[in-house]
Each structure stands twice: as structure tokens, then as C-alpha cells.
Length: 188
Image 1: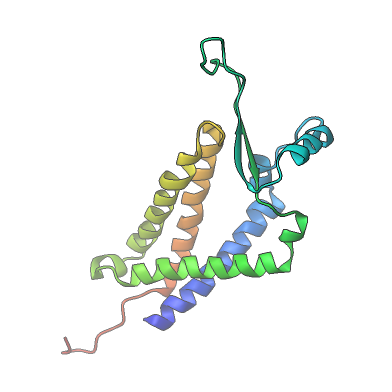
Image 2 (image 1 turned 90 degrees about the vertical axis):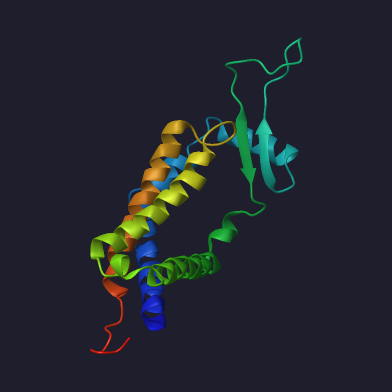
């Protein structure tokens, strides 16, 4: 079973890379959510560069009212600075992403291999197992990133749906590979 889990992890890692290339590289999914253009980008960039030197996640709030409260209906901006520039998007990043993809799917395939005969003997249930993993990521990560300094609700919902669909595809691939070993007749 370990061999099948490793094969499923590699196949799933390749699937994740192809998915990312198609959905993000060709169709620009993440760019449409995470890389929206800022008007007067050069001016905003210079202000951020002058005032934010340490990597981190920052919030930029409106000034307090006379009563010491944040004014309602005024925008709050989230700023994320990872501490690196475009050099971080090189070949090492692609290799690391691929290794993390393999590890992620290998862990999920291993968990699937530990499930009951009822689950592992049904292709539908194996795919459903992976969809539920996607649902866990969607609820615990994507939907929790909604709110002040994070994503608007529409984008958080789209990211959650993306994760569920991605894990469904991973389930379709992994479900073909992970199968309960056939027991010889008369053995227990």
C-alpha cells in the first residue's frame, strides 16, 4: 500500500502543478484575486517602501473619531509584505512548490489508505473523501480569510470553491490509484 500512496502523492503533485499552470498561469485565476492593479501604483509603492521595512501583515485604519472610535463605513486596508522581491519566483520556488504538493497529496493519500473497506472499496467514496478534505481547507482557511484586512466575501467564496474543486480533481486521480489490496482466499 505504501507504494500506491507514494505513486498517488507524485501523481497528485503533478496534478496540482498542471492545475496551477492552467488555472493560474493560463486563465489568471489567482492574479484576478491576489494581484489587482493599484491606481498610481508607483506612488503607492514608494510610500509603502518608505514606511514598511519589516516583513509582516499590516492593517491601515482610518483615523479615530473624536469619541475615540474607528469611523463606520470607512475602508481598512490590508498590506502584506513577505520580505522578498521577484527573485523569489525563480526555479527554487517551483521545486519547493512541487515538493510541497507531493507531500500534501501523499499525506491525504495515506489518510485515505487508512480508511474503512466501505470507503476504500468505492471510487465515489474515495473521491468524496478528497472533496471533504477540500471542504476542510475551504472552511478553515479560505472562508476565514474574509473580513477586515483580508478578502471581500465574494473572493473568499470563490477561493473556497476553487479549493473544493481542486480536491475533487485530486480525488478523481488518487481514487484510481489507492485500492484495498486483494486478500488471498481463506486468509484473514
